[in-house]
Amino acid sequence: METAHSPREAAVSMQKLERRFASGAGVGPIEAELHYGEVIGLLGPNGAGKSTLMRLMTGFLTPGAGSVRIAGLVPATCGVAPAAAGAWQSGAAARMYLGYAPEDAPLYAELTPREQLTFVAEARDMPRRAAAEAAQRALERAGAGSVADRLNGTLSKGNRSRVNIAQALVGDPRIVLLDEPTGGLDPAQRQLFYELIQELGKELCVLISTHVLGDATAICTRLLVLRDGRLVADGGVNEIVRAGQREQLLVKIRSGAKEAPLEHDLARALGVPVVADSAKARESGVDAAFRIDVASTVREHGQVDTAGGGAAAGRDDAGAAMSGSEVLQERVFDWAVEHGYRIVGMEQVAGDLGEVFRRLTVERAPGE
Image (cartoon, rainbow, N blue to C red; front, top):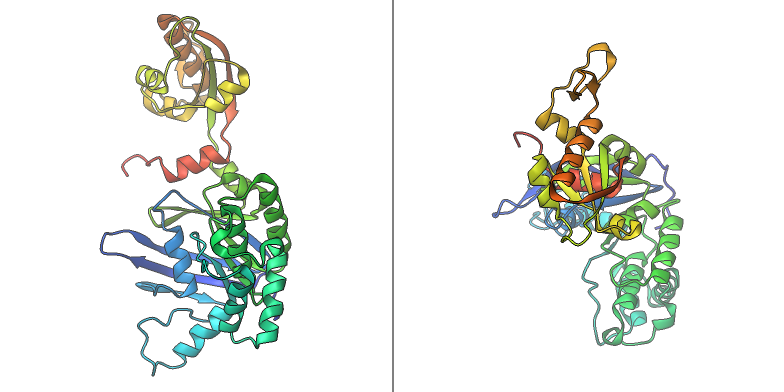
């Protein structure tokens, strides 16, 4: 598929797209356009609808409402009457634009990667010789050339992942969908994958479903975040982080001879959510580290007073206005003294992508 496209031309268009199952799970309604020259990360917890959305794009599932178009064509033909005007031809043409790597790496154990990809190329109506060349080219691009003639059933998980990615590149598709593509890759293989996707993303539309936030920040130019089948964020990585960041207080504690406190101990005392940051505790050499949302403390325990252009969450003993962070620090200090813990650091920090992702996909808004 060698046709050139304008970067702003819609590769994938979703209009009020929806598909629900008897259990109530599913996706939609979703409105979004994906463009050539983008590497888009599709993020969301298990059950958010990432795989369902990809299957709608490939035509494996038909929409229950709305539509999805691939390069202007409808991919789904399941359940469509053969007499429907051009439906079958449209579906076949749409799928020629697509390369898809499912999460479970569906490889025939008794075939070699070369044989598997040649078969896939022939299924895309390539002559035998062209199919063999396309298979070799895809294997090399995905870094799987060294295992091309081993049986799929003997491959390691990392090599199976690379062959799965190669399978999605057979035929030089213009739109590449990768479902959890870095599973099983070691750090060196992951870096090669990043380089491959960055190169593909210069001209193609690449959509990557992933749980690995490091993948998203390393290679994605745009993120779509799903929660309960609905699109809750759509934008660049920095844009989403800036929009979703909240002021936090990072507290580092030494417990001495006492058992280290747990997040629910502090949360119960403050009456607001507290998140343990074990990585920061290890990095800082302390017994416990916690992140506390300043806005939650103001909302639950203070009144926001914007008179004079400031935002006061409380008053000190002299009646002076105190910020939300100052109120929070005072309450954490009182708790630590009461329970015999030593605070070795309290600092205001901004949430990173992981914190924003957690808030978008886990926390419930008031009244929700």
